[in-house]
Length: 328
Image (cartoon, rainbow, N blue to C red; front, top):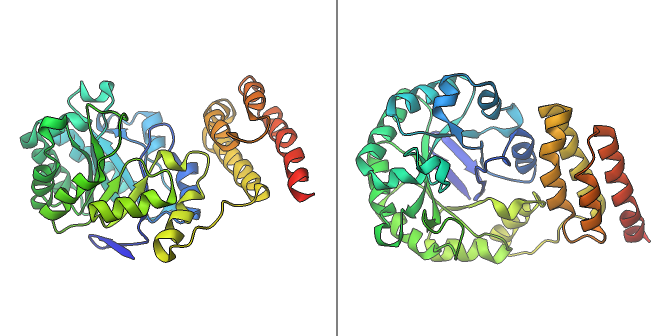
């Protein structure tokens, strides 16, 4: 079950998607521990990277535990994208991923992200510049097209392969869909037919069966999961096992979940510092606790807490009665 990206071999078929505000180093490490074959940074603006913006440089930081780790770059200027790729090669990235899939207006109005799918010539120039700039494998993430009438992912895939791209990821929606409707996994098969490099399918993998259905409909080599991991990073391991054996393994017991939550919380505080770490932790704690008894009231309390120790105590106070109930 290996996927080859240039000289790098991935063990497994399940990849963690790049997610703005989510796939930071603590989250990527957690995903790796749970069996992700590849983890990818949050989308990084190439201009900000070249200017050495402090926040952007931190977003691109990596550690040995997450190897191989890809840094995803966004931008619309070939020279700047190439320079940003070189900087990340020097900083230890194993793979450079080019973003041509982000549908957010702030990105597309700057002619980056999925807006590049409307300009195949410029897209090709960016790919060529980045590939020439680094010795690392370069990959590309895109959507099926800008809108339903211009689903040109197969054509862009061929341009990408001819320009040196080593792996493609396709989210099964157009840019205009944003995250509405359903991802069209079957359309990804058209991309797979056009190229000989690995193709990864992405979009709407929320249950174990979604992963196998995506692979069957798309003929993709692997599956990339994003929102399906919110509050349950162990889902990656469950999907891995399901794809290997067809076995549906249960989520970890609440005691193990609590250990994961506290470890993640501690790593966020360590990574960002107390103030920002606590702010970032709030959304993760909301995802982890969703569906547990009394979670709505707990989240309301937790979101008003401003002290790190107080927040940790609140977590204990919420989880301990639930753990005692489970053990009884």
